[in-house]
Amino acid sequence: MPFPEPVRKLPYANLSGADVYVLDDGQNQVLFMEVPADRAPVTVPTHTHGVEWGVVVEGEIEMTLGDRKERHPAGTTHLIPAGRPHSFRFQSGTSSIHYFRERRLSPDRLRPGG
Image (cartoon, rainbow, N blue to C red; front, side):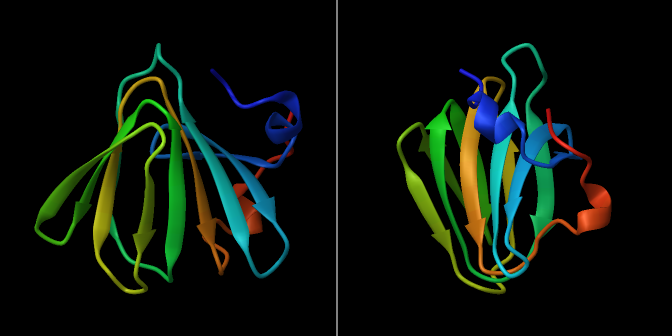
């Protein structure tokens, strides 16, 4: 199920093939990420940043934290410590929400939403 209209009206970016709607107050960002069911799974390569909290709304994310792989089905949350290398694989039909106490996507990567 796609995010509702108010979310789809937020600024938009494409991240490694995922649709991302961004709520940004200048110091914090919330990313609403979707990989539609008719799209191939999306891999976000290994990266680091500040603390990240997230929740899988539907579908499944495979997360790699260092050497450890974890499955995160709908309803699960994650907390990634600052500076911890990690990557994601979003399965087709997955939507999730990710919170950062920093800007993850710069304003120049965003375009107006719906």
